Amino acid sequence: MSRALRFTRAELRNAVELVKADGVAVKLTRDGGILLFPAKHIAGPVDPSEDDDLDAAWRAYEAKHGAG
Image (cartoon, rainbow, N blue to C red; front, side, top):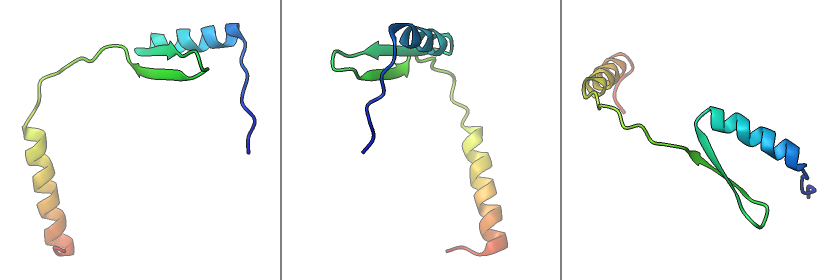
């Protein structure tokens, strides 16, 4: 069984600053847990042609290697 890791406040502060710069939000819990989640969700337009490309690639694969 592994030992619990211990970090100083400065180490935690530096880690939080680094991940916040990459768009990740951090929440420290009272029991010592660390929760990471996206700071904001940027909804972009959906491109349905990407599905068509995937379907065509799958059909080509099945034609070459056999289905099933």
